[in-house]
Length: 587
Image (cartoon, rainbow, N blue to C red; front, side):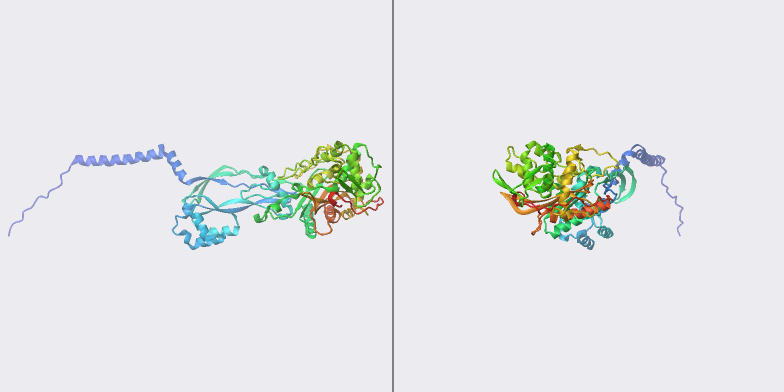
């Protein structure tokens, strides 16, 4: 057996220099990493933070809402309520496979009442968009349902929409806003800048799906809109709306308007129009419904102008309250046409001309006056210019006599034909008479209590008082406006019924008026009622418009606790029931 020899085990020779080289290399690597980390954390920290924030930090708007619109007693006529609008991040939405074919998407389309195929095509056409509005101001229940579907890319933004508690009653005065919360009609548009708030800004951190995960603070506070208090009295407005609507429907009329004005302040207490609309529903905002007839529609005022013609006569000094005018034989031929009364009234004083609404009487007054003497009163009370309410669409009326106009034209102007006014202008004119000849600018804003209200004297006080007394007889037995009477109060007013002009003359459609002051002894309200194109045989101002005046006046007087002044105690004088205006109109 061979003898096994012990072998010496070979070992790897220790290379000291290689070991140290490797250690140095590793050490340098760690030093480099530490240096780079220090550089990023210290030197480039701000730049890196900005780069990171640019991918996740956003500036988000803070919504602000419009101010309240209130009536004179603080009742809300318009307020902003929070609502949510749906918008899509289409790029994020399409990242989910087959999202447009999912059951959630079908439910989403159905909730918004959208055709699924059309919605899909709409989305695909905007495949590169990261923000696009889909539905503004959705129903709260719908938005809650959509949120529960939890579809990535479907987002919500809180906005504010206007809500109008009184709906149709104050629709034409208050107006309405669009989906962008900007005023489009009425007070909402006229005072849009005042009512509109200023949005704020805040900084937030969002995730990959643009959902807010952290709020970093407010950059600019939101400023809410200013509240606006109107002169409108909701109770009187409701009465005016109710009675006007009843009259329009019962008479088969095309439309109408009522204006109630405070004689002492010029404040408009009510302004109603028919037909009306619901401002809370965008589908009811049709142009023929949203027009405020009180300030936009112009009509020949008919016999409601006769008291102003008498004012012109008295102001000229050529007539006084005892002047008598022979209206026989009840008609006269001027230039190329006739001027007629309904019958021969004989000799009348100025009081009788107003009571019997004599076309012949006022025509003879006008023909005795120079053009300047006759027209001065019409211009002075505000005809031919807008009233200064500042509401969109207010008409100026038409008061432009032809140069060298004929005697017949001048005569017909004296009883309200040949020029046009709005119901608001007519209310302002009667307010001037009620204020003793002081003209005050009408306003839809509530005036501060105890404010000294400036006005311009345009009619002598004794003349205004005399004419108001003449108008009292219109509502008494035998007058044309007996249905305008108010129990316990004396009423001064004038009926008016005029044919509507058409091409080549006058048609068979009428506009009926009643304009008046109450209480007559110390006028508080000037009220004008206009009904456009009443149907049937009852188309006179005394039968259509006067009853509306009576009910609205009665409501206003009792609501504002106006002291009764008793019935007229002077003897009533029997009068005819009307007169014929140019084209055959009657009072």
